[in-house]
Length: 192
Image 1: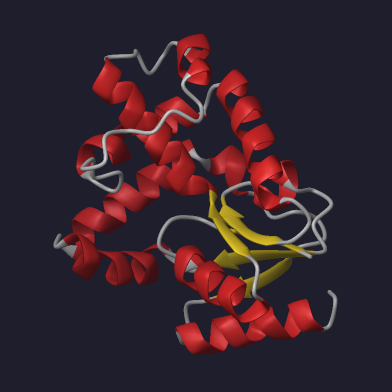
Image 2: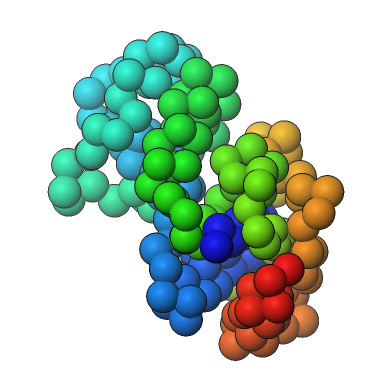
């Protein structure tokens, strides 16, 4: 079974996807991390983030082992890298191959573009202030600064952040992580 979990930054996709994959005994594929790795590899090699063809040729190339793919430098460039159609197409092909017949994929367009035929599509959402309050301690930054960054990223990634027509939309704001995981597992086990 393919489970596609979409949603914006700070909504809990990674934690939920990891836990759901572990419970189902299938692979977990973090598509956002794949774009971050590509961005880091491009930055390390001096590839221009506006050169879609050069970036697409780097899909699958790993950055240096000590690179912080969640750091500020990569975070500032990842939207620019991921906006190129040729990059997205190469990346989607790679993600589909990795998923095979059973996996939990998480990202911004896994249910709409990467795996549109997924057996279960979930779109997690939460207000910007809730997401910022969650991310700020992880990043060691002020909540207001994180909220601004999240709002900017939402704007840049708006095209990729639309729920699939048949996605189950879950507002994670008022829920604990255990409740969100339980809700997704219930849907998965029901064959949603």
